[in-house]
Amino acid sequence: MHDVSRRELLKATAAVGAGSLLASGLVGAAAQSAAADGRPQPHPDGGQEPYPGAESPPAELTGRVVRPGDPDYPTASLGWDELFVHYPLVIVFAQETSDVVNALTWARQHNVALRVRSGRHSLEGWSNVDNGIVIDVSELKSTDIDAATLTAKVGAGLNQLEAVTTLGQQDLAATTGTEGSVGLSGATLGGGFGFLTRYLGMACDNLIGAEVVVPAGVDGARAIQVNRNDHPDLLWALRGAGNGNFGIVTSLTYKVARLRKVTYLQATWSGLDDLHGIFDTWQRTAPFTDFRLGTQLEIHKSQILLFGVLAEGSEAATRKLLAPILSIGSPEITVQTGGWGEIYAGFQIPTEDEPANWKFFSQFTRKPFPRKAISLIRTFMADAPTEDSNFFAQAFGTGAQAQEPPGGSAFPHRDVLFYSEPGAGWGTRGVPDSGDPLTPVAQAWIAEFSQALRPYVHGAYVNVPNIGMQEWETAYWGANFDRLRKIKAKYDPRNVFQYEQSIPPASC
Ligand SMILES: Cc1cc2nc3c(=O)[nH]c(=O)nc-3n(C[C@H](O)[C@H](O)[C@H](O)COP(=O)(O)OP(=O)(O)OC[C@H]3O[C@@H](n4cnc5c(N)ncnc54)[C@H](O)[C@@H]3O)c2cc1C
Image (cartoon, rainbow, N blue to C red; front, top):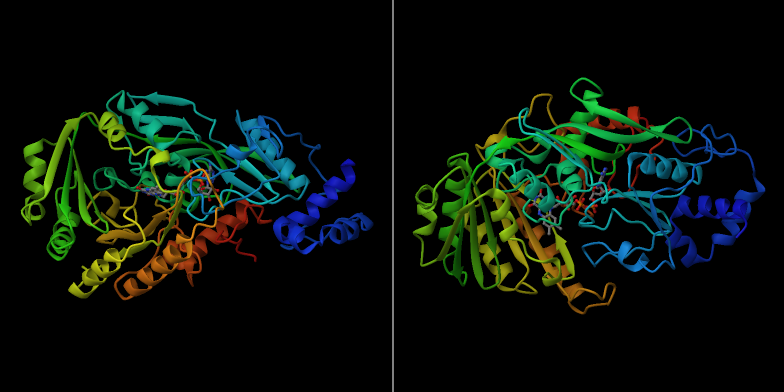
């Protein structure tokens, strides 16, 4: 296709969303109308369209560039949650920061919809887009660890397993989530909790710096260094609201802690008969226990699982702290003690063994669930669409995450007892978009389950987005939302980074 008409086509399709234009047959008309009018178009946010008055030289895509028709396009365009399938126009796997600068400039100059991607675990498929550009940082894998100053600067492409393993080799740790294949970037920028949260705070609390590629001028991009001294407002925003909102993070710098050993305990109860006692005891003890102990409860259709990690603690100490829960019924208990890196690697489930499709609903809780709410969990879990579906809960309470880090954070949920989510998992991997008959069943189950729990919960976790939720802005960020909009207006005034639940600039 001729370059000019291709540009106009891209501009026209990106403006409305290519899928809808293609489906409605409007591509030709929209492209013609844009081609007939060569003048700069008014930008929806009050600026000017980038060309023909572009300020930056025309950008070329650099790095590993994958397009439709390339042999690796099917795998390159697939996300972890196969419920969401997208067909991007191009995927750029950045090899260095300049590839990200070029890609963002190119996207702006061609007015193409763009998404940022790292570990591909977005639970609504929002790191991908039809007929747009996906700027993927997952091949930025550098690590620079300074054990003397307890800091680690890592490429934005590390997944959590890679980060935990690399740090663990030096008896160091920072908080991450529990699933190793999740991107460190995606988890940290939305908050990031896991077994070490009560010991070390949220993952975003340990973030002390970042390199970020932000829009610059009419149609360009530049990399900026963010830390407590330079762009401290953006550092604050990246700590809990950084996912695809302000710029593309290419490296992350963490404050890390020494961690020589942990004890990892798993208890399994068969059936749901002990649920009331287990859940009630857990919610009244785990949030208030020794801050070195992180726990998660997972309630399935036919079993209840409790996981605990005690940082720098023995098996005896772990059993003692968990005794009120472990004394209920007859759980099967396994315990391991070792380095955090090896323990973390040991409890990972290979992605290929997991269901293809997932739907979650996130929520926080300030007051213990009454008996009625626990009964609801039992009723819904007994009726779960699959055995993989579960009700997951993570203790917060009086741990380190209750305190803001120096400089503060956009993550607001500091006063909660626990986080929880009903989650449905179903289907076989490798056949995305297969029209699985369980899909409507699972979707209805999760919708009804989350609705039934609403009287007992508040707020939501941006890393587990609740599609269709009213007032998601305050559910994710509380009173911080207004400040986030102002910071957005400063770093991305033209709203280059936008998706279904992105933060609009204050001027919009
Ligand atoms: C199986 C599973 C288990 C999970 N467990 C936990 C858990 O224990 N604790 C927890 O806190 N969360 C957990 N999560 C939620 C997880 O933190 C989010 O799904 C996270 O956003 C995924 O990040 P990603 O990089 O893998 O995904 P992606 O799909 O690549 O990105 C997710 C979002 O982050 C943005 N983003 C990614 N990289 C960058 C970047 N470099 N710069 C700017 N924006 C970027 C994307 O645009 C997108 O909006 C879990 C999710 C799954 C699927």
